[in-house]
Image 1 (cartoon, rainbow, N blue to C red):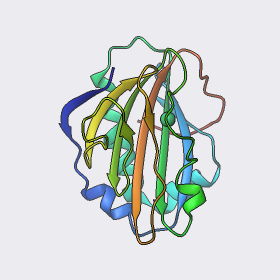
Image 2: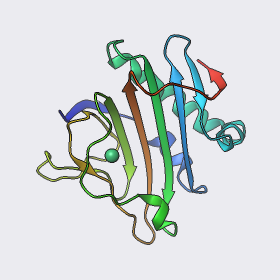
Image 3: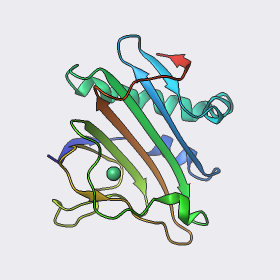
Image 4: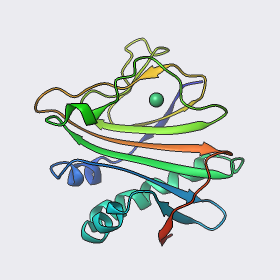
Length: 170
Ligand SMILES: [Fe+2]
């Protein structure tokens, strides 16, 4: 069930990554070993050259402590998106649910934020942390010209296994 957590994540670090190129990357963390597993090897290059992004991701990773340790794996999905790449800003699959038996933490900064059917205003608030699960109906949105968005989703699952190289630990 969708829940707005009373946590506003400082967007100043998100703002430092806005203004750069478009990226879409996924990485996973093995909670037991406290390691990140990187799906997209371009992420390695990006983090090496963008220390502010690394710091931002590290600070957000602390949000994991909000959850009880009941899931085996944690997956981060991070997108930094600009209009001009509208087909990449969202798959536009309409209303849907994510996975099965998973839980998620979601933060979106910027324009055209995720909409949930259970919210009166539909759109989630800028920079606020939300928790949802596989039962929550929602949809992503395509950016219009001049708009940008930073999206961070953390998925808790017993099914998605990390299988990528370790980039750094914390
Ligand atoms: Fe989704």
